[in-house]
Amino acid sequence: MTDAPVAPDHPIAMLVNPASTAAHPGLVELAERLLGPLGLTVVLTTQERGHAAELAQLAWEKHGALTVVTMGGDGTAAEAAGALVGTGAALAPIPAGSTNVFARTLGWPSDCVQAIELLAREIRAGRQAQPVTIGRLVADGEERFFIVNASAGVEAAAAETVERHPRMKRYIGQAWFAGAVAVAAVRSRKSSGVQVSIDGGTPFRMSSLSVACTRPYAYFGKRAFDLIPDAGREGMLGWVGTATHSVAGPAIAATGALTGAWHLDSARLAHGVSSARITVEAEGSVALQADGEPLGEFHDVTFEPAPGLLVLRPA
Image (tube, rainbow, N blue to C red):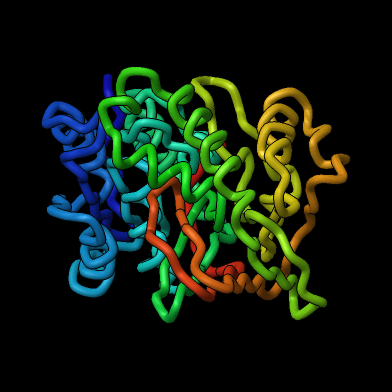
């Protein structure tokens, strides 16, 4: 005997990124079958970068959705999250991308089918949404939200290199990114770096800065990459910066993040938390990335904690 359908307390919308790594029609059909009796009223499909934000706003304003399920990767979830901050609607990310840091950090299984089945059980059980802090950045006047991490400098330059060579990324994966970081670190020695100020404090110079609103910072396969252990506090952002002209800095940070966070004791690195604002100023321009997506080069960047997002996470 199966459980009777539960009358929904509020409607659910689902956003599907058909270009994401694991998304396919069978997954959508499974989600519709399991979530339909629980309140799923509309399924919307993204068509291009940035579209998920528009669809999340549409789901909330037009369709009255108070739970928005995203079937995609961190990029899709980040776009939807930015549109849902402060609305009272909850985000439920189904991990259908390549790494899915945000969904995995919340506790969802990395397997899409298992995540959909678990989400249905959690909704049926009446699981309440919980608040989390994400990040907001403004780069030369352009606003963007991030749900995992953002960076200016070496890592961002490496992300841009990786995206320019998708075949290398596909064939050798994280090793290609590690190589791109090494090249970017060597090139950074010719740069004067950036001026960084934390919560209005005295500016200091760094060659690169990484900011995170959750931990771990990333995953290498199943292994957590815990670059910023200070991240994940409600209402705050964690950060770590590399000293100028230090080729060894990125290597120390990466090794320590994989083997026990001893990198935070290195004199080549600085780290801490911000409760208000991190400002970055470049004499020329500096590469910027958010949630693994290269954004280009900018002169002035501000990172801020952005409370007000509700998420569904398994017990």
